[in-house]
Length: 534
Image 1 (tube, helix red, strand yellow):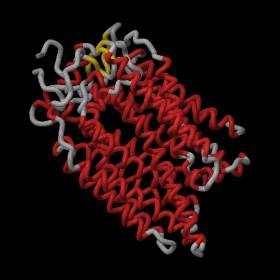
Image 2 (cartoon, rainbow, N blue to C red):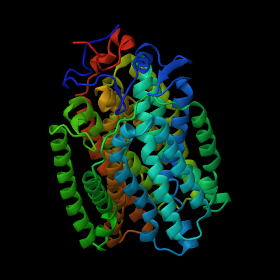
Image 3 (cartoon, helix red, strand yellow):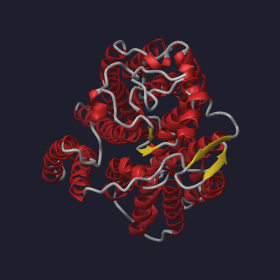
Image 4 (tube, rainbow, N blue to C red):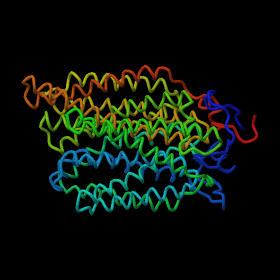
């Protein structure tokens, strides 16, 4: 049975209803998604020859690969002091290991919509995994800061390709009735993996050198690559689309300039290097404005844009993404600010910091699939609104309860519900936002979401650190001791998180389920009409 409904009732009909993740889907793949892509043996064609494959291993290998890659993004957060001593570099220089990673992600992700049209799914996967494997190997052996930074850039390029591939694969191959459950696993990747980074890093650094951080990832990536080689098949037909190099340049300058400026906020607050970050911000914003205008004009002229911005016309997608960004910025800001507070104000060791952060990350990870199942039954609002409200309440409590006398138990007691709230927000909204789009825009919608997440992560991290620093300076000038001043600063940081999450609660109240995910049609149809329907 084929549904004739559009996914949200707010997006115009598209010309190629058989498009998946930016490429043309075969009739068999369409049927697999509609009638049970979770069936262990599903036949599709890749444009050349039919191949029997199992969906579960494909999703599993992408989830594991993305988990390791996102974990890697925050793995160095508590290792920076160790790296500074071992490599004889300053704090500003060491910060480039994180800033460079985010910059690369922001530059590469906008091109993934094009890559998933131009290349086969298998080729995108192998390229991403190969880049991450090479980067991890170089990082493991890196003798100097320059080599380590280059390795991080290579890792980031692979990571940027895997995230959109994971999301579009879920949307393309998983039936709507089970999409929330699978998106719960994706939510573990997005929310729990960054929070686990400091915990794992703290344990490893307590016993081994920083090189071991990368040694730990190698066998997992190798196994995932081998499994991917065995099971990964193409569910799209590559198209000969042209790469607009002008758009690539504008995207790189725009997103790169904005992220560099955001990463430099703490330096601006401290009175260092104000001019260059401000210039970078201005140039970045201007480049993004020109980039956006160019993408719209290319679409109007019938040309293929680097990043199709039509998903932003869908209200459900846009509002969901904004709420995701607010939650993600708060979460990443917390991952950075809490370890600084615990070491500076509470005098905790690196290992203790990692163990303290672990319960919150574990709660978020364990809860993800359960939240996904509830989303399949209840829709978004009954889950997202309480989840975001929980995050807001915790942020405001942290403003008043995290002082110089707070113990490890207090930090855990506050961080666990924050992780639970994050799981309740991320899982439903990822399914809701991308599920609101026609099939041909899955790849571009995923690219938009992941690119903006990098901006939100940079914003959250930078503002949390800047406010923590500023609050500590103000308290110090008032005569407070160093530990008390640090605690005062963390209150400033979480006040910002409280404001963001409170606003997000109001936005979440306006969300509603996609029509295609309600009622019996959810089990019978994908979100775009099949070819030939009215």
